[in-house]
Image (cartoon, rainbow, N blue to C red):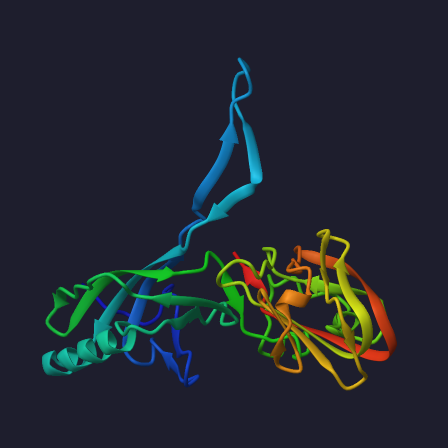
Length: 287
């Protein structure tokens, strides 16, 4: 079998989540023949028959997705047989640990798949100095994460890319506000629900308030703190938990969460007093 240059092969990047170190598989001699995320797999589907009617009723709100499988076919090659054995060991050490890592392609470097390689991997020889493996990477989330954060400018300078719903006028999108009515954009393909694992949402409010309420009119979700804050107090909603100046206040709330729909989310605050600032932090989720 002839091993040519990149040709039509996708170039894969592996990133250590803890250290941030990025490994270019192509430069390391790991040539990818296929890197293909499988389609979304419905894990739980709610449907019910109605009387003697044909067919059934489908309930999308009660349907959830399982994790995501990515089929990765890779060739590991060396300059000699002994060099190949070394490269094979290095490759297995790179992806076979217990910790999750980010995998992405150079064509879409800002869509990060958080994956592991849980199954046994075989690297049979195809020539004396190369072996080929068919690997299934497993993502606990059905979606890829955005590399860019909400503090990064929405342009194509390196953290964002085409297909990420970046607006024509990016400066109009803001995630920090000092007014009671505002819009928060979720540019991903999926809603953000902090009750689910792998979906992160953090909201920070600083300022005085009395029975602070945060309402997402778009999704109909509402969170409220039954208490007071002063001008220097900080309220934090992080996933399903709530804090005031780092102290838990969950029992003093209505014990609800804020959910973000894809696209624009219209917010209204109640109970604010004087000047304040509210900020949002989350990652976009992409198919």
